[in-house]
Amino acid sequence: MLYKMILLFTLFPLIELYLLIVLGTRIGAGYTVLIVAVTGVLGAALTRSQGLGILQRIKRESEYGNIPGDEILQGLLILIGGALLLTPGLISDVAGFVLVLPVTRIMLVNWLKNRGIQYLQVRGYWGS
View 1: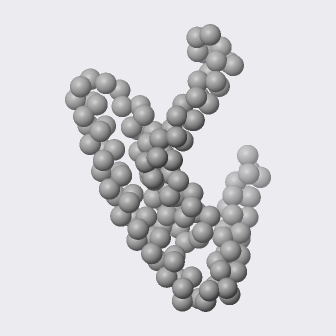
View 2 (view 1 turned 90 degrees about the vertical axis):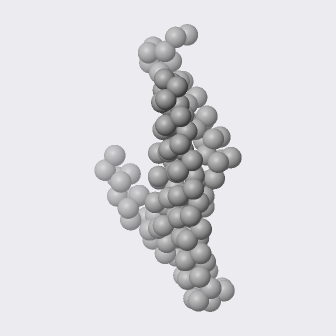
């Protein structure tokens, strides 16, 4: 686990930095900074609107007495996606948009739920 964390916090930023340098040499530093700034602003706006929508759905489901499991998972993905979008970099921006955009986020929630059920079934915690 420690090695995975070291890789995550050293290798990932180095790859992001390398890609930004390559992009900067290809299109210019000004345009590269502009891309990073625009994706940050657009990402923050999208994260805010999607997050508020999820909060409303959590409230509505709770008022009806339902457990808002999917909505909570979507809210977590939006939070992670928003953090990635505010982080300068190309890979983090793509990952952030995948987590924040509704179509890909819902597909990811369904995939995570299926993986969780499979995990529990293999260990005998979920019905056959």
